[in-house]
Length: 110
Ligand SMILES: [Zn+2]
Image (cartoon, rainbow, N blue to C red; front, side):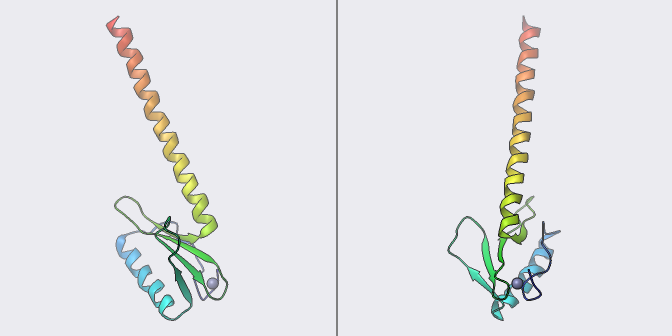
């Protein structure tokens, strides 16, 4: 992170307009050669490397309820794994409810 790339992490875009504003800023940095777009990795929406501090930035584009982010790679990885963990916990919660309902119905019907 440095003044030539971005000094703040973006954990989520507040709105799609917010994202578009950010995208303009990012494009202008790419055009000026301050940041370079890397397109070899397909797991992410976009990867950018700062030509000054060599920070590797990862972009996730907002999509419906998903708010996206723009974070240094390390933070993006831990952020993604935290989200996956939260999703698997809520998935586990649903299964528990289904099982409980099945037990209740079983007890009622018998
Ligand atoms: Zn930088």
